[in-house]
Length: 546
Image (cartoon, rainbow, N blue to C red; front, side, top):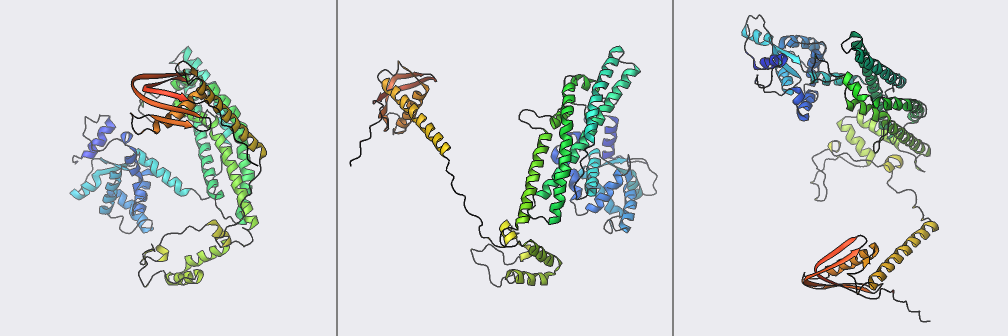
């Protein structure tokens, strides 16, 4: 006994391989979803009933090809409800159906149907509608479970994978040569297929090893960046981080640098044979071309692997980034050690006192917290009896514990006051730099004087002369000032260089065209007459009267 179900028809049509035009569908396939739709797969993690959703998704992802009904899910949730892992009442069938429908709406589950024997319509509806997990939802739940199992400490870097990657790349070259040789003899022979399988095995192994290595390096340095940027570190923490940085990171960096050269050489050797390698590792005929391939089957995968070890123009490798991150981490640790040993100046640090006060606030109830606040900071209750003045932005109806968080500066945390420390640095006398700047200024003045003299000499026959680049620059500068002095386009304009006694005058005259040739090009002024007057000499400074 079955009933027509639209979602089940869509699911069966997708399994049978029909197109979207054959069966009407209200939900786009997963491979055509945009980013916003795919992000809805994470919605159940922030829902108020996230514990129930997590239990349901773990039930569907615990076995392969899970095909469960609402009754089966409710029975599994009943055991979780007795153990206290889900809220009471979540195992009710109606509630379970609502949760399953919501997961279907988000895209985590898909609806199916199969024939069933039922004694009532309600039992038929609950037993015949089956639910299956989607492909992307499996990945989301797998990442969520992995994240919840991750400890807070540092993750060990898989250094032992570096020599394995080095050996694997060498074996890929040998396996590729064997596969090409076997293909030339007989492409359909069993030996040729076995050679391609061995090649695929080596490629998959190398990329899996590199993915694990890159993930451990990223996780380790993310933890490292989280802890070394803290301003206040306890002495035992500083000792632990010192061993971590000085010993462990040095060992990691040395291993990476030792194997990078040989790995880069192997990748350079495989670069020329990459097209043949990708051709031999083409998609299997059973799966078709529209399928998610394993790593190492595309040119982008090999380029990503190469960029991890080899620098390229404008794009440093991850090995270079690892060295830079290590240097920054060691510098941050040295700064933390300096702050801890110096004590922050003459006034002792207030870190311990602030931590003790925070502990009192954490363990106090509402009434005691107000009393502790008044005693610690010399203030009374944050609830005011009168309205706040106009210039005060605080809300008198909001307690201090619910108000905005104030950022405590470093000086207040370490010394307990806001006074400035230190002194301003003195200005250093640098005679060499001063002489260099004076020489550059003299050279610039000499070039401008020569350019002005050239303009003054060519003033009577400006259209016939070929000006230098500096002379054209001075002329354009004065020409811009002259045009800016005009009130309208029909008015004349003039500009004067008072230092070199050179004047440029612009007269509008329709039909006239002025051409000025130079080494940088030709300047053409239409409907304009240009006049240059002056000798270009620097006026002599009169002698001072004694």
